[in-house]
Amino acid sequence: MKKFFFLLLAVLSLNSCVVGRYMCKFALLPEEHGNDFEGDRAKTESRYPGIIAWYDDLHQAGMFRDTSLTGEGGYKLHAVYASACDPASALGTAVVVHGYTDNHICFLNLVRMYRDSLNYNVMVPDLHYHGESEGRAVQMGWFDRLDVRRFADMAHEIWGDDFLVVHGVSMGAATTMMLSGDDLPAYYRAFVEDCGYSSVWDQFAHNLKDWFHLPPFPVLHSANIVCRNKYGWDFKEASSVEQVAKCERPMLFIHGDKDDFVPFEHLQKNYDAKVKGYKEMWVAPGSEHAMAYKDHPAEYVQHVRAFLVKAKTL
Image (cartoon, rainbow, N blue to C red):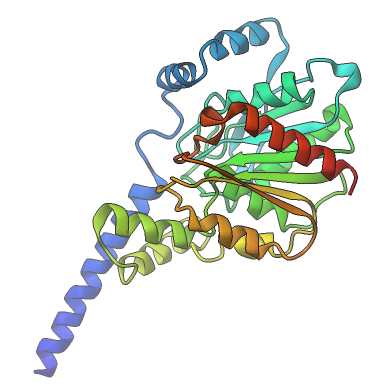
């Protein structure tokens, strides 16, 4: 009986390791990772008609420029940047951070909002392993926060603003929250997170249940070990709530109440975790994942504008 028990335990352990490796590869090495530029251009244009022509015209005129730097792990990372619509009266700098399997094209709506409507300079990175950037695998925001900081510091060197806001959507929102808890220079003045997850562990546990009808144990535990050994970070340490708890600077939290990809309840977890400094929350009614701007463009701009005006006084 003991032999059978240990044999069964060994088989289960082996199976969980195999499944854990599969999950880690499935989640962190997706086939498409912001590298389908034509598809992403078409998707973005379908959501916001005319925006690709707007971007292409400015890019061809030299107003959007490409840049690169060496990121975490020594990989070359790409970004585009542009001065505000009226550079002489620019109100600050915005770093716009895209989501999982996206690239700098996918949230041009926010780039246009900041540049044209709010008159901010804009820096828009392609995260590690996304778009035109190199990388080993998706980092789910944890090491990405260090790369976003590099680009934000580059933006400060270009424009010298004393007011910089980091605004991310989905995984970019988690990146933003994870960055917010670090020891940052004074010119990092505000953060906007749109539908970010409370931690990588929480998000993957939801995905396991939603897609595969599996509990976290033992698959997620096994995948976490694989990630730690192979990529040097941990699903639990990659925590938005733990980082937000250390953030003393203003933050706006946005989430659609029909979001079932990053569940709506993550909003409250993130919001409640911020116990220091100013914070605001806006729930986008009827919006699914990352659709708050698409569904409510005027309200979205209004909330962001009012938040930034408030943040400047703090």
